[in-house]
Each structure stands twice: as C-alpha cells, then as structure tokens.
Amino acid sequence: MSRAFVNEDNAAAQADQPVERQVSTQPNYVTPQGLAQLQAKVIELQSLHAEQTAKGEQADKQRLADLQRDLRYFTQRLSSAQVAVAATSTDKVQIGSWVTFADEHDTEHRVQLVGEDQADASQGLINWASPLGRALLGARLNDEVLWQRPAGDQLIEVIRIEPA
Image 1 (cartoon, helix red, strand yellow):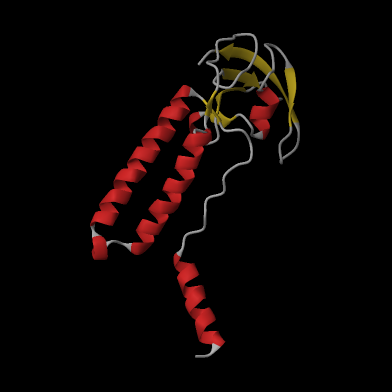
Image 2: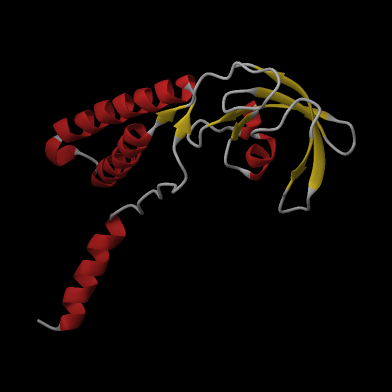
C-alpha cells in the first residue's frame, strides 16, 4: 500500500477528533457559585456521556468525542478550582465583589468579578483576570484605575463595592 493512502487514513481519523479545549494557565479562582456550576457541568456531561455510551453502535461518534473532550476539560477545571474567600469588603474589590464604576462619560456600570468559567459579560459577570477585572481587582472605593482595553485605555472610578 502506498504511504499516501496510509496518511490519508490518518488524516481522516484525526479530522473526526474535536479540537481540545485550551486550559488557561492563570490560577483557577472561582466563587462558591462558580464551583457549584463546575460541579453541575461535570455531572451533566457524565450523564450525557453515559447515555451516548449506552447506545453502543447507534451512538453518535462525533457527539461522543465532543462529550469526552468537554468532560476532560471541565473535570480538569474542577480539580484545579480554588474557591476564593467570600468577598465581604465594601472598601476593596475582591473576587466575588459586585463593583459599580463610572466611565469617562459618567455612565455607571455594575459588574461582579468571577472565575473564568463563570464569566458572562451579558450578565455582568467579569473574569477577574480580564483587562477590566485586573483593573478593578484590589481597587478601593473612590479609586481611579486605568482599564487597559484593546480599544484604548480608559480611566474608570470605583463608586460602590458590594459583597457577593
């Protein structure tokens, strides 16, 4: 058999495998809610994986491969999770804090600093290691901090800090 045919077979087999989800190199700090979400996600994926495996030959091979990939990722994220101490300060921004800040146009924005897997900007949940999260983390009430954004740096003022 020609080497070309062997390589084509290998390429076809690799094409069916999903691309692995990249695991962040930053510490995996999570809020208690974020930990609960990770635990629920792993349980959900284990259940879906068991359902697909039980189907035997009728299992959707691509779906099964995707579930295995996601299960590896979320299991790793759960095992590396470090629950941040509950945010209790109203003077200093911590992971879990709800922060209200004013931008250059005096528009107020309210966000909560959370772990990477819990982040959802549409809900105001911001990754603590994102540019906005890094600007706010450790800031004190009435501090002006520099938010280094891809669209250009912006000074923002912390006007309220609420515990989680």
